[in-house]
Amino acid sequence: MVVNCDEVWRELSNYLDGEVDAGRRAAMDEHFRGCKRCTSVLEGMRNVVQLYGDERMVEAPLGFGYRLQRRLGENAHPSRRTFFGWMVAAAAAVLVAGSFEAARSSGFGRTQLRSEHAQPGRGVPPDMMVWVYPDGKTFHVLGCEYILDRAHLKTVAAREALREGYVPCVRCMKKYLS
Ligand SMILES: [Zn+2]
Ligand SMILES: [Zn+2]
Image (cartoon, rainbow, N blue to C red; front, side, top):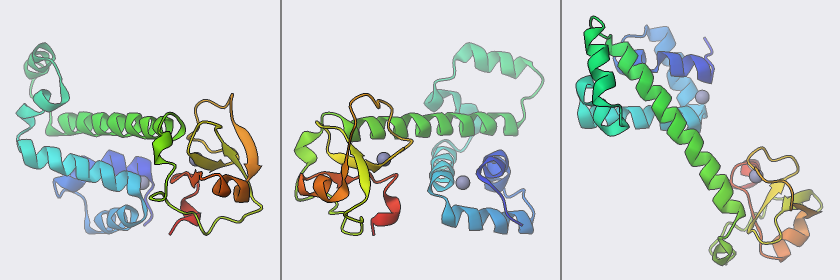
């Protein structure tokens, strides 16, 4: 059985509750091994579950208002699943926001990180054309989906980018980094 990210997220609360059958659990374990995104969601969920242990506390860390919680309380008994579903959604939202934030900050204003501590990117083919921001510190494959502002990009050879001290984007250049 092979599961994709969507299925993993749908089943995550059941997985944490130990309510998935052995075949699905194995498939999900397999997916977690290969998918960083789902692994971070899983770990985030686990932390929340361990920290708060009780779904009644969920409103506190995630900022759900008291009133909303009350309304749910009145709506018969909200299933555990509903709460966990929210947590997955909230964890996902945080992750998405976080990755955009990371992409932004890798492109803007962190010039002091263009330094010897950065990833050297030795595996990058020198003739490959890449994208850089003149004032940034990372370079990207052409078409990197993590770049939000494409107006000021320059296309240069990777050799040149490396010589100027740019480092490979850890997302789109992942396969060249070891
Ligand atoms: Zn995944
Ligand atoms: Zn990139």
